Image (cartoon, rainbow, N blue to C red):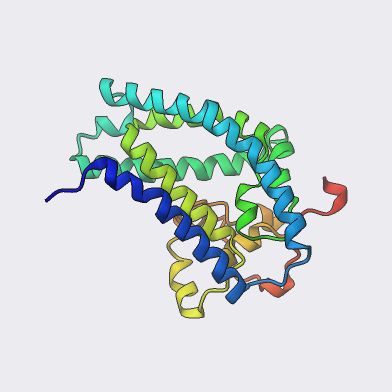
Length: 247
C-alpha cells in the first residue's frame, strides 16, 4: 500500500505546528538568556512586522520563484544541471548552493547601507527568541527578490528542490533564533554543522564586530570558510539588539 502525495502533504502543516510548539516549550524549559522585555509586547511587534514580509513572500516572491523553477526544470538551465549528476546529487548540490548564496546575501545585508537600513529592523529586537525569526521588514523581502530569482536561475533549482530548501531553511531559522540552551556536548557537535541559538545570539549582539560574524543561516561551514565564525563569546556578556542611536 502506498501513501498518496496529497496525504503526505497533509502532514506537513501538522509537523510544522508540532515543531514550532516544541521550540516554544523548550524556550521556557531551557532558556539561554534572561528576557529583557515583556514577551507579550514583543510578540505583537514581531508578528506585526512579520505580516508585511509574509505578504510580500506569498504574493510576489513565492509565485515568481516557483515559476522560474518550473522554467529551470523544463529547460535544464543553470549550473547544477550542467554537472550531469544523478537526481540525488543534483538535489544535494542545489541545496548546498542555495544555502551558500543565502549566506552571501546575509553578508550583503550587513555591508550595504541600502540593505542594512531594512535588515536592522530585524536586529532592533532587544530580545532574541523564536518570534524574532518573523521580524523581517517587508522592504527587505522586496529587495531580496532579484537575488532569489538569480539563485534559482543561475544555480538551476527545480520546484521540488526549491520547496524542500524553503522548509529546511525555515526550520533552521526558527531553531537558531530560539532562546534555547542546548546541552554542552550537543552544542559542541551541532555548532560545527549548523547555526545554533548560542552562535546566532552572538550575531545579534549590540557589538558591531559580533554582528559581522556567524552569518550562516544553515550550514556553519560558510562562516568557517570565510573567516566570519565567532564562537568564544559568553552569552552572559551579550546585550541583544541595537543601541537606540543606531535605529
